Image 1: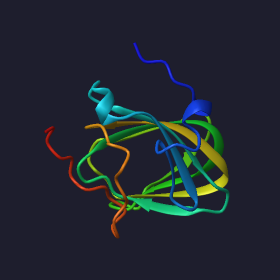
Image 2 (image 1 turned 60 degrees about the vertical axis):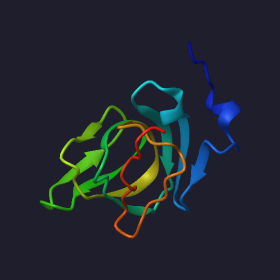
Image 3 (image 1 turned 90 degrees about the vertical axis):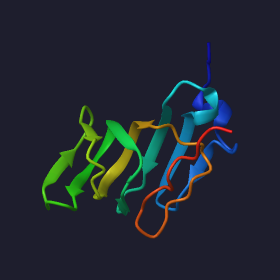
Image 4 (image 1 turned 45 degrees about the horizontal axis):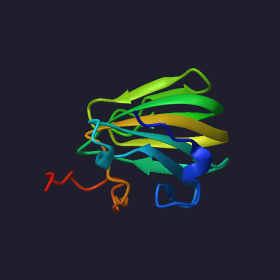
Length: 130
């Protein structure tokens, strides 16, 4: 059994900031459960582009508001508490934040917590377990 609080991971290597966004990585690959689970916040006014070429991501919005744009199709979706989106086709996407967004995200395969977004907004491919 794993029990963690966001308070205890704040300020540790599991607490990662990308300027306009912050991700508290609650469950990571080394926890050995097959997915990772994060609490992510995005600051008001931020425009963030992401592209997870090697991961499927599910996002549940619990606070704030904004707009999600599918950069492949141009379709836009309103983000508000209770909205879920699933990037099951590795869609390039943009999140524009009106009110601070707070979201819970699940990644499969799990991230290690050491990934850095590259120039395309993507993480590198997962590395096989040693």
